[in-house]
Picture 1 (cartoon, helix red, strand yellow):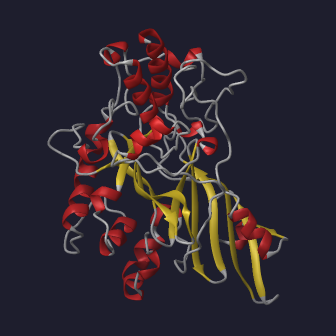
Picture 2 (cartoon, rainbow, N blue to C red; picture 1 turned 90 degrees about the vertical axis):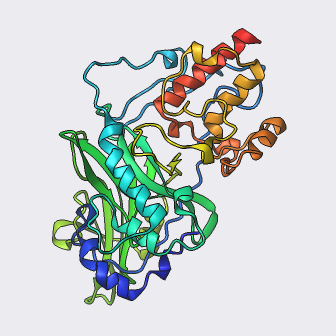
Picture 3 (cartoon, helix red, strand yellow; picture 1 turned 30 degrees about the vertical axis):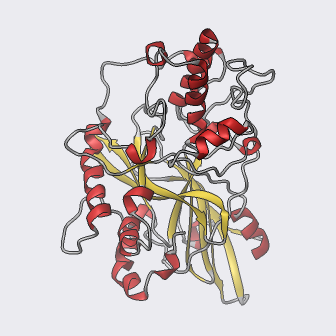
Length: 396
């Protein structure tokens, strides 16, 4: 568990100015954490028969059409899923752009934070985490993920880890320490999270933020990264502050991320209702790639710690072809297909599948089959699931 409550008062003073300038939250005062308990994912998507081989590749009747609503890369399940995205000649080499970011983060995670060094890409949250690693080997728990969050077909880079809320070990969410986008072929920080200003991934291009400046000051909201933007835009932003006139708390809402009551709508509600809104937001884990990272060979990641035993380790990051599937038996293809789900911690009703993935060091079962939400899958995974299922039927 991440014991962020152990951050000392001395460190808070040293970092206070830095914290106040992160992520467009310059007017937020760091204080005590407010834990957020995400609602359980109960939406059941029609996956391609994850547990049994008999119906593999068949789309159950009533399968919903799934699409991102935040301007991200939309997709459809079914026959359309096996059409690869069109390639363009003018493609940003995002791995090269992000290479110095990952190289510097890998250095800090493996050798520690050097207070005399001038870092270019280390966020306040990563600095905090390196100060208090507890018993964790940081390169094995903190990872990175490429996601096209703003819908411009160029992936953003997220840095973070998955862990349970300190008040509920059964609930796993992502803690995002930093987010980078590419502007003019340079990595630009658009999001920075730390212990008292936390960001979590909600899926579909949205982030959930929560923070606190004391017993009377709670902050939370939902935002997204607009196309071409370098900071989060707020869809909803809530905060509370002490109202001396009434001897209690006052509650406010806006769509700007401001903590100024004069720029916000005052809400006529109880503290209980305010906290119910906070706890209504659903967050989810991220499928991280873990360090170490080799900066001398961009794109050549040593993933032995997390991919040992995988049949197709990169099925989440590129479009597969039938040539990639040749030589596999039907059973091996079934396992390869379900690796895509297993990376997200999905459990399996089929005992043989569950036994197989339980033997993998990288597998952490966290989500019941009926609670798994397929909308967290990226476009590579959606299309590769369809391709593997169809090829699996050919070799049966």
